[in-house]
Image (tube, rainbow over all chains, first blue to last red; front, side):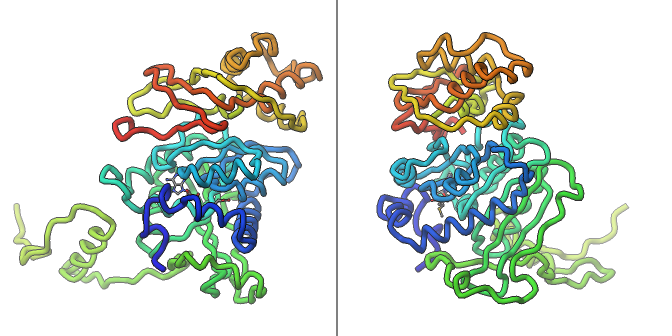
Length: 290
Length: 123
Ligand SMILES: C[S@@+](CC[C@H](N)C(=O)[O-])C[C@H]1O[C@@H](n2cnc3c(N)ncnc32)[C@H](O)[C@@H]1O
């Protein structure tokens, strides 16, 4: 099965029958609960028992929100799929639900939200589902509005399935441009099924608090069978290493060279930038001008 | 949708400068009981735009629920906390619409869920 993101836009993919799985499949329910518990843990809210106002972005059937409610928090859920929200109504989700597209921005007042979680949703922004869709603009609108609505020092924890390195880099770039500090926490990096990547973002200038917690199983300890079996079959997990060394190109005195330029241009093309075609003039040496 | 969410939400239409507060057209309002947390109310109070909350309660058919003005000292009163709690967390607009204060664009509310999806020319 190809990735869901390649099959149809989210409001079509998450139709009634897909949404139904979130009430009938105990495996699906358990996965959502587990990931949301971990996301909430990574939010690192003060341990004072005081209920907060949180966001659940791509709240879907309200399973992830249920975790927030169980911990006493209030939440506002955003989702683009009416069918998923119908399931949330059925489950009597306690948060307020909005039928909305995160790629259009969240439309919240500045500084009012104490934290945000998102489970397997943000990678959808990387796909242009309509001719008017420009993934970069949508990522910018999303992260910009997320940054603005969070209180200073608040966190956003976004669990996501990036298709490849380019995609995770693109998502990270827009998060950082919006002003966030933070990085990626990978749980069970050595298991292709259980592996989960969480973008942990902090609003405001970097501080001691913004240092990242460790991923589970990062040191090679094995996860339980339980964790091992919870990969979502329908999702291919992209490569998303935190400390993955970048390929280095040799830079000599003559400059970066034609090979480097061609590679870079290809990368930019893949990311959807308009890049001039490669010709015999590409990266040619120029005579010195005075 | 509850007034807590209404108090945080503003019109997201491109070009709109002051999208807050959204007007409320309430056709059906229901009340659901929620446990009161004084700590939550104290924490959220500084973030609340009081005028919008009062107007919201009025639009939902409760013109006398809240005092016209409020300051943090009132959070010591149980009566005030109960009213604040009821307005913020217990009243739900089930059917109706939110209205952009600048353009008049209506965002319909069905089964308690506001449809905030923008048209292409509004993004
Ligand atoms: C894996 S599901 C998450 C399920 C959810 N956490 C739950 O408990 O049911 C991903 C959700 O993201 C939503 N989504 C995808 N793109 C979106 C967008 N642009 N705006 C809002 N929601 C979106 C989908 O509709 C889907 O419900």
